[in-house]
Length: 425
Image 1: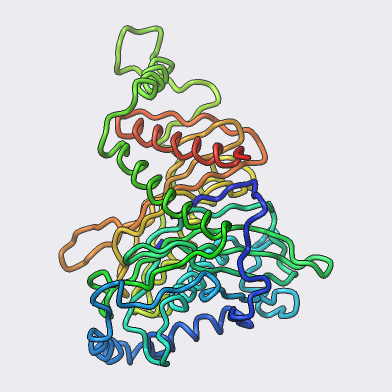
Image 2 (image 1 turned 135 degrees about the horizontal axis):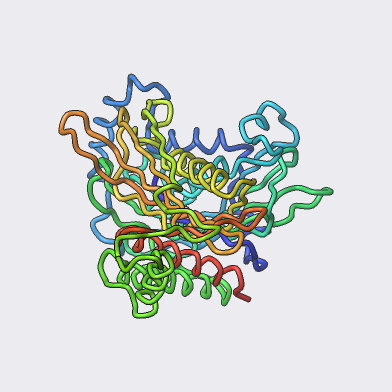
């Protein structure tokens, strides 16, 4: 399940659908969510059965709609789901989520949101008669996650809620909320927006999904926001530094930084000196390797996208920790696109790089790729952008090469976007 994310430190009171909706579905825990997903697509819990299970899914091709108009429209409340994560009452579950700082591991929350988002979409697209779904629903991106709490407590119950908020022809936007129990009352922790896509039973081509009919002004506003989110993502991709040259202001930033590193004792472009309280970009990176075992597979027998996000986040956190010299707190996770699925048995390489710093903030980029031992070729699967805040002011990161300068500017763009969101009313 595949994923892009933006996490914001300030959260407006979200519109939470279905607090009094009788047609919503409740699940006692995340284990039940994943069990339900396996039942919906006919996935086996045994890896040895995966080949037969995928063969059986091919026969579901005839159940796909030829046109979106052939599918019955849905309402937002039709896909509404609530799930409880009983950290307060189940100490054995708490161990899975606990980190060394006695708070909840954010990577685990990303995994849970990914699973819940997929189930919400299957609830939106379910047929009236019980049957195995012909759709393969996967996460295309995590558009944003807005946090209003710096610490998530490991000994208090958590509740997730969510529903489909916008629908295209083959894609769905899902809004989810996470709340935590304090003093008998659930208070908001985060608000998340994911984008999912529907594909055929073999996950090879797009498939139509049920249209969505908003009811009332608030739901109509949510639907319009989904359209604007789609436009924003297209615009952001259009001006990527991989497609277009930096702006005039950005070129000035790079040149001024270059001049600040020249050795004034020589008249040479080659002689470079590191300024005070600075670190060369090439000296601020970490790498990791994961062997992709069947244990981490999703319901379609590829590596679970939430697992990939968790591993990338933890490597990014470690990079920020070693660079800043103190505990970093996540401020934003932005622009995570899953470019290709990761197969079982793959060798997954992760490379984490500090690419921009400002004050106490550290912008980290994590690049993941798989290695095919037969062709001996590497293929990019994801690029993650994380913004962290350190407890102390951090050194300035300095690029040497043109490629590093582009990483610097890209990191600056993501940092500025995160800060703009954090200061939005």
